[in-house]
Image (cartoon, rainbow, N blue to C red; front, side, top):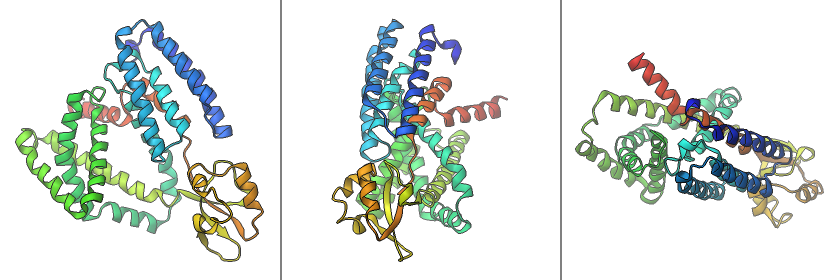
Length: 354
């Protein structure tokens, strides 16, 4: 990968390291990403891009930045990460190597690598900090026959057509459209399942039956191997996702509460039970909706400490995305693709050509 870099790529990577160190430090200490830092990072990134004199790639750079900003806002609106994280993602999109701006949204790879890293970050505690019956329940839920049938239909039918469409549009980098297409397929299924309930199975069955008429290689060894491996990965990811709900929250005493902590429940004194925050604290906190979205402020914590009948709160655990975003950007620069696809290509090359 590095032999395809030009001199300005290395300069831009050094600048990215400096900005990343500053922003990560602020995010960890204060749980904030300042707009002035993001704006400065974006402006400097754009200027250093121009120093490379690759003006033919300028439209792609601007398209990448615009789409990254819109996608970052979207993930903020659905509470995946904060507004600052969304803006940081857009800023990071300005620092990819020049050759990666050929597809018009290659910055998608940063997001993919972010969630892969987040998954790995949570994997160890999910394995060692959950109980045996919780693991079994999560496994049963993921491997339910109906879930396996639906996933099979999605992968064999809808995923193929979406993948071909994304590939033709050039949305991916090399073969990077695979995971994007997979995500679109699963989101489409989730949306249609809410709209059509049980009838959604028949919709995806029709697409699965139609595939052989469009894909001559539908029954090839490589196609079936891809289907099996993808299905296995999704079932495993589903099991882990179900398991994650058991470690997504922690109990905190009032004295341990910090700015940005998002309360889910209330530890009531003498009741030995957890009450819903919205119901229990509705009268005391008129801004409860804001608290449930952005967490406590210093004033909120001070107000909570004056309430006599609570011991503490059940607090939602969050991942700091700023370090993950910066690390994912460096991983994307290094590999030129997403982590899973890179590992899959190594395994594939070793198997068939080793």
